[in-house]
Amino acid sequence: SGNAVAKIKNSTMLNLEVRSNSSANIKDSTINCSAKDINCVIVEKMSYINLSSSTITGGANADAIVLWSTSQVDLYNSTVNSTKSSSINVGGPYSYLNANSNTTINGTVTCGNNVIAWKDADLCQ
Image (cartoon, rainbow, N blue to C red; front, side, top):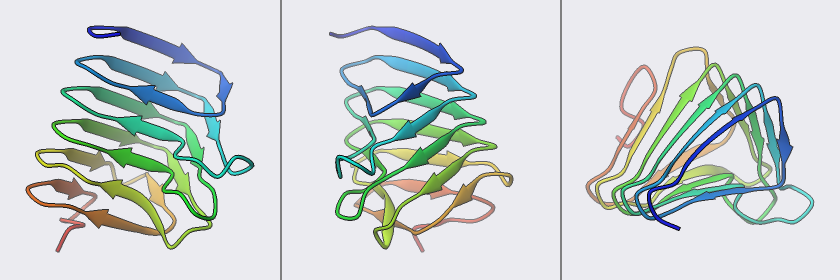
């Protein structure tokens, strides 16, 4: 549903989808969808996810994190793992991925049109 806000701490989950003008604050948590081989985190349509001190592990054939149109994901002191070569897909348009220096992204970041992916430098170059 639209306009929802979730605050989750110290949890383990299979996946997280935030859509339609909603937001999620995830801290000290694990999102592991490697057994299901699906997108672990999906954010779209004016939505926002903040992942702090958390670990996201994707599967072999699906990106761990996917940003669709007009969405934002902030990664703070977190780790993104994927057995796929691409672990984050900033699909866009008008999406923004922001990762701080203490965030580890194992795998590449795939960028669509009119998007920004930032971690110490522009990851979409």
